[in-house]
Image (cartoon, rainbow, N blue to C red):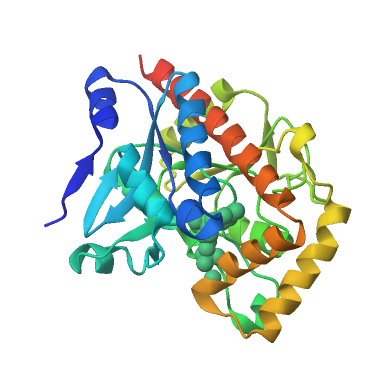
Length: 304
Ligand code: PSU
Ligand code: MN
């Protein structure tokens, strides 16, 4: 049946009662090129530790659900090329068939919840794609946020998506969208979009308090925290827009569809910005790891 393997350091943290922060692995296999993907994963893990929590990078390796990866496993996953990109629909398939797959935001939330981890840091969530009114391409991440009680820290949704429609779906599905320390929703590479954030909180303690109140109110599902990328690392929206338009046009002319869309767009934008988008991507994931760790610690402090 379902076997879960905890890494040595996650196992030790569980025994010691150290707060845990889940990290996804699709960003490693499909979101960034080797070797920066593995370097970034290591830097994020360290950022989480520096804040007093323990990171648990999640992936399915040969049919075994891994909560926390040993360094060699991380390295192998980062180099591998034939890895499935798992979401809710194919999570059990990979486990049943002994496959190796990285976990998207949706699948990482499912796995984190199975392992009793309540806080998760990523780069950007999937959302409603531009043109979704004809393609119906809406990430399963949104549905998962509605269902599974995990707090997800991201840097907003990428401008490759339709940010406005993404917020509409989250509102319909009852997902609190809280921007950390700002009034506007961040747009991944950029600190600000032109959209007001539905909610705002300024400290990790208030986020923990909010989550406790949600549970006390019997409200199921997750919370989305949008954390703006640090100013020194951002790429302003005007600069990004032309690259995004180009990447979207290339995806259309190449006939890219389904699961391949997000990785294709990220790869093209990396090429078009000559790697600058990757620098920003790394900075924002680290920043999110830090905040997620602070939230995990604040939740642990409340429970005492
Ligand atoms: N955003 C990024 N990098 C990524 C992803 C999102 O900046 O690698 C990944 C996440 O794992 C997210 C997934 O859950 O893409 C969404 O894919 P889709 O749109 O196919 O649901
Ligand atoms: Mn999709």
